[in-house]
Amino acid sequence: MFKSPELVTFKEINLADRANINVIEFAQDVPFSVKRIFYVQDIKAGETRGDHAHKELYECIIAQQGSFTVELKNNYFSQKYILDSSNQGLVAPPGHWITLENFSDNAVCMVLASDVYKEDDYFREYSEFVQWQEDLKKVTAVPFLDFKRCYQDLKSELDIAYETVINSGTYILGDQVEKFEKEFAKLCGVKHAIGVANGLEAIELTLKAWDIGQGDEVLVAANSFIATALAVSKLGAKPVFVDIENLSYNINPELIESKINSKTKAIALTHLYGQCADMQPIMYLAKKHKLKVFEDSAQAHGAEYRGMKAGSMADAGGFSFYPTKNIGAFGDAGIITTNSDDLAAKLRLIRSYGSTVKYHHEILGTNSRLDELQAAFLRVKLAKLPKWNTRKNTLANIYLTELANIPDLELPKVREGSNHVWHVFALRVKNSRREKLIQFLSENKIGYNIHYPVPIHLQKAYAELEHSVGEFPDAENFALQELSLPLDAYHTEDEVRFVCSKLKEFFAVPKLSFNMNSGMKGLLVEMNPAKYSQ
Ligand SMILES: *Cc1c(COP(=O)(O)O)cnc(C)c1O
Image 1 (cartoon, helix red, strand yellow):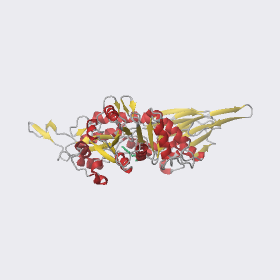
Image 2 (image 1 turned 30 degrees about the vertical axis):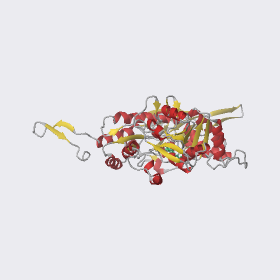
Image 3 (image 1 turned 180 degrees about the horizontal axis):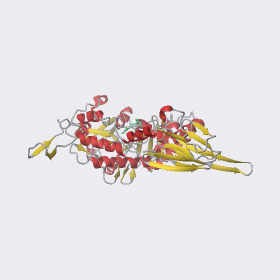
Image 4 (image 1 turned 135 degrees about the vertical axis):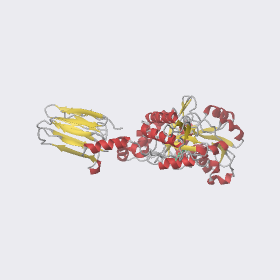
């Protein structure tokens, strides 16, 4: 729960007999950016200093001169450190009680702090600190997502990313975008990645590059986020819906062929919730009917199908970095992946006014660029993605184990040979119990979401396509039952277990037991009246 303290060593430059310099490179040597520095000197021998703790502030304590000991402790950890060298610092993360003692005569204690002085960040009473830690451990609410946790964890790296870009003087299509594109292409195992403004335009621009437009049809799953279909509509082409398979909740390969006609130009499939669609039969059909295939991987950063990565299996793939996605920007951003040199070159033209040489426009393009600043932030997060995906898998497995025997829940299934990256933990609530359940989750301060309450073909925006209820029964049933539980790399295992225990409480099945005190002999059925009233 609390980060561990660490002793760090600074660079020492010895200028022979002239001077000795210690250099502290912030965020490299010290894992936070410094907002405040103070010195403590003329400390009386035998005195104790410190005796406080912080909720959020980091300190780095340095014996700038002389020596002293620092004790760091909390409910789970206790250690003493001797500081006696000016090229060493002790990083004390928040959540540690700090005591300084055994000062040598000439000791000067220098403290680097991650924030300005804030009285309400302090504990000065040990007993209050102990209580705070106990309270933190108790889960009383679970947010669906809490962006602040990630920001606080990555703050020093993000701050550097920000400064690097602002100082570079290049804010559009510079070094950061280029590096991010290379790194993202590597993650997906493709030749090219082309940064664009958002996930919707990743789809739209690719279909445009394939000259899809008026009179053309593109097959899409009936249950995705509207963007997949909307990208098709924006080009004047027609989205043709296909029902879903019940294993991955993605487009059902068996229903694709009956939708193909002479107008069909492409399949824009989705890897929904972080699991890939069943690509092998889909690619077979696409080849047979000479269709382009686009992988909408906006929820599947790093997902795998038979050893291949999302975004690398078809003609092109598109990703969104909307803040809630597996890696999210601090704003909008997207990227397109492909192995085709021609497509990549065309997309680079389209995204920036049809031009690669300034003021020379080869085609009528648009403005859909990934910002330098977002690219710099995304590079920081991309480096964490493998770790986050593993972490999410650990948390998902807690759900899968803990909720396994609840008859009214159908848990997500992972296709053999696939690697699910859990954009969300999407389960099905059966027997019309979803409404009551979400009310119960709200009462218990547990965040949830419904992805998505209305399938695309029944959205008002698509009324002109004249679809009706019952046309895509699997997608429609799914929309009535789907519920997404909190699952983020920054959730704790205790939080996930809290959600599980509440769900078990809600779905509590009647227990059979003897009532020994009633004087009656026989079986009594103990019901959980409030929760079992349907
Ligand atoms: C988020 C999302 C998009 C759209 O991405 P934006 O960056 O918000 O435009 C497209 N498809 C799917 C499946 C998504 O989840």
